[in-house]
Image 1 (tube, protein in one colour):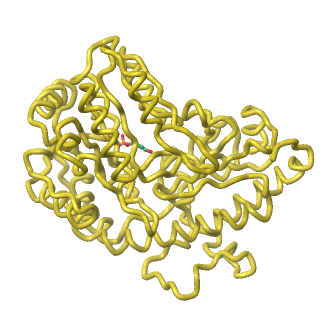
Image 2: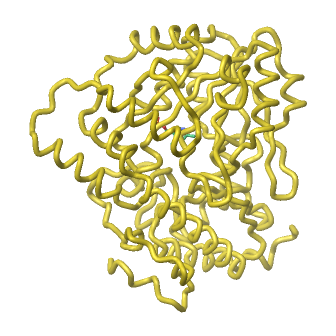
Image 3: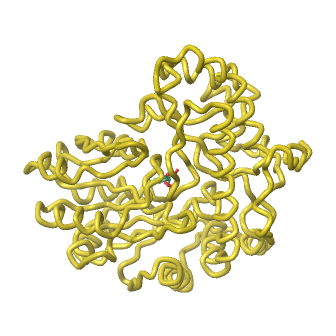
Length: 417
Ligand SMILES: Cc1ncc(COP(=O)(O)O)c(C=O)c1O
């Protein structure tokens, strides 16, 4: 594919003229043939071929050159024996958290982990018993429920409330559904797939309720760094003493810097009791050995990734504006929810009047674009689709043109608003 072939000015895909980026996010990089989940497994998972994949949450951008260089240096060494995270890795992570999130953490709060979801599973095993209730707030990242039920615990749903285009937590509802077998709440902040960056006051109220009712909060903050201009991520453990005492925070550089194929995460728990129990399960489940490339990549990311990330966020914000504008023209019945964080805006397609099965069929067979179905994220996601906009604008433009072409006629039949 010609990298910039589709990014002509007439498509309106160029960045606002006053913004010049030092890094290149426009070039379309061929990812077929790299065992990419997003690009190489369409027959297996979507049952179709020739799709533009805007589904799973990785980016079609190269990682920052400093990371590529650090990994290259490590690869060139050629010996890949057992590896551990050195102290400098933890120092780099702590410095990143202060710099990016104004959160001062202590070294002893941190545990290295193979990934956010493995550590969520470990926290469930460590801090709840079989049959206990674990709260999730759908629509939300579906692997939460899979880890809860897969480990013999019960999913307790506290669905988000939708008012207009704004999603909020139902904190009154939460208080009512907690019983003596409810032990944990899995928070998603920023919230995938609704794109909310939860405010400090909401987090304070949530922590107050959980502290009062003996509920541990496992806060998945893997999208913490991916916050749109004008919004600020607030780590839940930083909002109050009560929150610090009842929370386990999961973070990683993998989403931020497109390193998901390497793995690696950090678990942060100020409370020594919670930490000790999680550490014990980590020891029972994991070897403690790290991926050599991931260790090099993460430290380089935290030490040198600021400028690249700042530019990435500008590019994604512009992609979001482009998405809004394009869909507004081509499919005005489709509403784009506001994007405060993540690079995964949610589209409300209910007004098209299609069932989820038909919508999926049209997107895959007619538009030849692969999105993630909202219904997959649980209650409240029906009739919606999540779109991954962390890709070159030319690719996004192509996908939106195909979606517009395939669904435009639909609106004439729709009875919805
Ligand atoms: C909210 C959320 N948590 C966790 C993950 C995956 O984390 P990991 O690959 O470290 O297990 C994702 C990936 O999309 C995610 O969106």
